[in-house]
Length: 65
Image 1: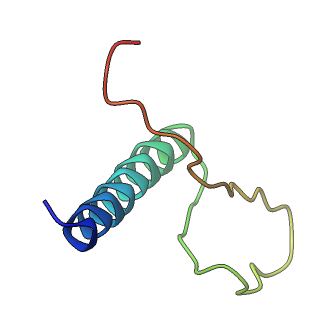
Image 2: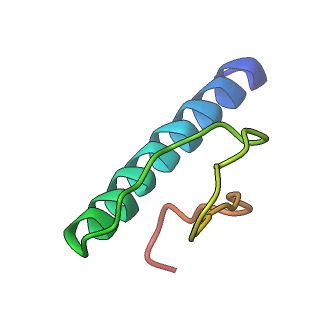
């Protein structure tokens, strides 16, 4: 596989994983009675009592290591 294809596949996996985690965290918050929204970085969240969950993937292990 070429480096370009590997990079594209890694990017796709990272986006898919981020979406999966967003759905899991969002569902857990909703189940506990919280409202949740997903906004792009840099968009002001509004006012009031707000919890912001933000992060980045630095390493994804594909094994049981």
